[in-house]
Length: 440
Image (cartoon, rainbow, N blue to C red):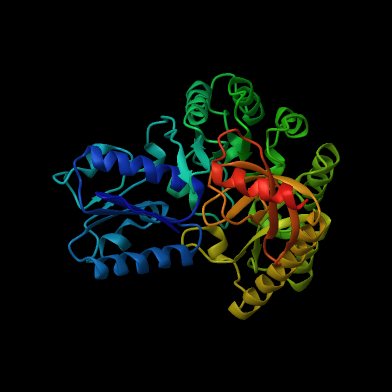
């Protein structure tokens, strides 16, 4: 969850980066509609826990400021509108197709529930907005929706079919972000590697990546959010291998390491596909670092199947793990399958997290003594090109610096800045670098 408080409209976002982008668009829409003293809760439906946290947050927000109006939207609101409409704290529920329309936020807009059929929504492109994270990177929504039907996933029913933003609009937005001073742009969507399939000529994600980098030569970093390895086309693979401004970090939607469980999930890749993809990409781009989504305790998963998923951490060389204990979502096929005991699910999730922590520690160990290019964030932290978090001390946010890695604390690297990589780094850092040089 992330909150972006404003004088008139506060946005509380749950879930994915796409929600973050849309949250900023909703704030603008609500303010254009003349709203004041309003909180918009932008929900997530990926897990039952995410929906529970949204309800808990709604109650807390109303307790803290009873005079505020609360509007609920997002995927959980789209899939279960009556649940949120029944809450006394909630004034209105908006669907995912309605939430970006300023008219829907007008105080006199009719109806307590405005949630339409997401599959009947116009095939218009999603909004392209630059959403700011710690004043360092801009997020561009380039695609929404999903045409697949993984048995555990409710998101297609919250987002509808896959719909892509035209490349010209994305490129224009990227150039605008660079002009506004952003060093890094992150491309995000629900099914990112499906980009362009609904556009004439089916341009594809790889072609878009190359077009952005060509049109924005001053962009220092371009990053992809989560991708599906089986959908990565040859052009994207070539971009990963050859475009050094495309960051060497891929977050993969793997979910499991057992072919039987992958089949029951209705995933489109096999275990062999995942391992081969990681091996081939690492051979072409040796500095690549992989993250992955993994589900622990999927229905019917045996100990042997669980062990195959655990082994995937080593076999694929995964570093950054997002581990999800299986959570049955009403209306999905997986919810009707034989469920595992909660203690079994919890134990398997714990084992995956421990394997992830060990893999991360090995990665951090390997960075000690190196000099890395970092993009600084607020709070004295930064991100390496491979998305590893780094503690750098008091350096202004949004700056590219070079830093020597001196060690780590088990979760993030520790670094000593040694040079500024952009000319706009302020005088305080220059003074610090001077003192370092004197000590050398």
